[in-house]
Length: 309
Image 1: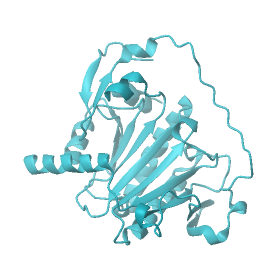
Image 2: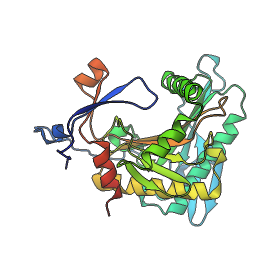
Image 3: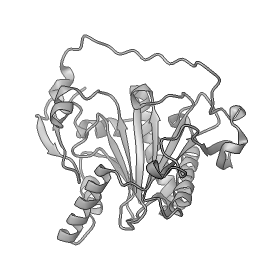
């Protein structure tokens, strides 16, 4: 239920030239159309381990009734053999159980998945022609999922995406002007705000001030480090705990979502974080025509939902 004490407000996105209109009252507007999602399988699941060609397995984790595998993407958009579209794509099978989503798994299994992201990031970073590594997960039909079995993906290329370039440039400009990390400053501010979701000694999770998506959440390492390979065991456990909390709450709302984490290989002064962007609504005329984003769930209300029992 929207918090009607919050008036509509235009907010600027963090380290991006985008604006979000937070409009809590719009959540009450009438809707004549209700979406219905029907998932059906047309063939044997390619991500169940019995159906995987062992020659396609790149890396694997077997631990405490947890099996995670990194396999070749057999339909890649980029390739190490194609100079005109240079890069690589991999698929991470999140767990061996076909019927369980990431939110259903113990924190130890989620921690193991993060370790797989770390291992693959380290391996791909060794390629001097790779500049950008994206670990991401699509869950649900609105998020672009095409296979039901829980899985993640890794996309790596020598091209730095424009949005990432813009964020990097704005972060560097901030650091030059203020003399310290903009992400560290944001962590300090949001750790004390109504948008805080979770915090311990190692990580903090919050709903961003200018959330572009309903129930959007970010998880940051409190220690300033540039990528997932630098997380220690305690930090990985904390990340898994925060991610589990958020995914369980999204599961109760039955929301599709994407989450992702970036690495710019040549930049050692990034601040590592993970973004979770639920797909509760579809951008329409205002968003597509003007570039202004309308969000009817204030981040303060989203954080309150995540914190609730």
